[in-house]
Length: 91
Image (cartoon, rainbow, N blue to C red; front, side, top):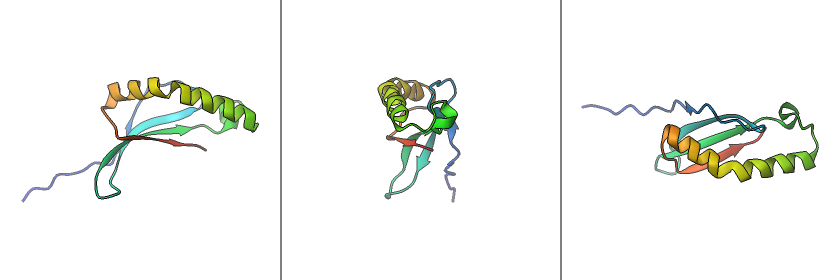
């Protein structure tokens, strides 16, 4: 009997530059009785991104990130393949 080994090691994506993104990677999620490929975008804190703790600054840079999201998704898909959803994890 052979078993398929399912790797849950994230595939990091390089070359994405955005002031709010600290890292971006693809991972597998095994929840909900099926497997999903998830593009995870982890953000910097506002202090790290150089915008202080001002909520208005956060809104502006978040809007900028969301405006660029389609381009980021296209770039990521070219690098690691298709995915089922995008998770944005803020610090």
